Amino acid sequence: MARGRPKLLWKLDDVGQGFSAVTVSRKTVYVTGEKDNVLHIFALDLSGKRKWQAELGAAWTANYPAPRSVTVDATVHIFSPARRAGCFDTRTGRQIWTVDAGQFGGKPGGWGYSESPLSWKARDLQAGRAELHRGAR
Image (cartoon, rainbow, N blue to C red; front, side, top):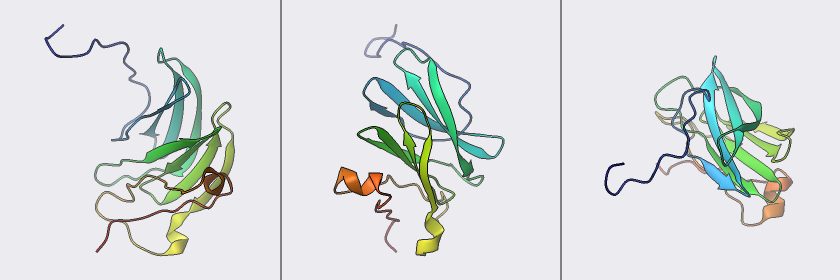
């Protein structure tokens, strides 16, 4: 092991493509990836074993797709570069709601919509009232 580097605990190669950041909550790792032009969210245990996977819709196929997720209580929320937002049950992957954020206006930049869902209160996300912001212009 090279000096100053952490030990690699596990590696996963079958979660598709993309530039997603991982979210870790309650001993579960959430990551997104594009497979066959569809965006998937994967829930993994701390050893890298898949717990579940779910689809959010069409993947962003232009430059550097980077969907973001956040967990709130027993739900995980995703905002896709292709303007789809969704909420999933953290235990089962069951889709609770999805919305096309394009209905609220705005246009994606070169990387699509690459922001994290934001809520001042957990109950807002659970009720489907997330704030979705795009960079200022």
